[in-house]
Length: 178
Image 1: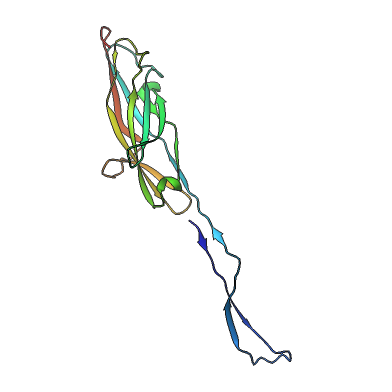
Image 2: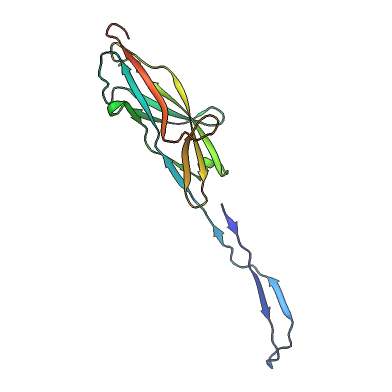
C-alpha cells in the first residue's frame, strides 16, 4: 500500500521594526511527498501420507505426487512435486506467499489439487496406483505487521488445525497385477 502526505505550513510575518502586530498566514505549499510502502510474506509446509498394501515394503522415493495451484478460472498457476519419504510421508517444498497472492485483499484462499503422479512407463510391477485427486485449500491473512498467516482450511474455510492435509494415498501391491 502507498500513502501520500501533504504538508501545510503556518507562519507569522513581522515588520522590519520587530512589532508583533501581524496577521496569521496559512498556506498550502508543495512540500516533498512522502511515500510509504508495505511488504508482507508468509509460508506453509504441506504434508500428506502414503500407504502401500500387500506384501511389499514402502520405500522412500518410490512414489511421486504433485500439488497443482489453480486460479479462480481453474487455470494452472503452478505445480509443486514431492516424493514419498520415510514411513510413508509426503512433504511438499515450503510454499512462500506475498501480498500479490492476496490480490489486494486482507485475506484470500488459494486452491490446490493434490494427486499421485502415475508413471507412464516406469511403473512398479504389481502396484495398482491411487488415481484419486484431492482439493487442498490454504487461507492467507495479512496480519498487518509484515507477516502473512498461511493455514490449511477445508472447503468451508474452517481451519484444519495442522499442516497435514489428512490425505493418504493408498496403493495396492499384488505380484500378479498392475
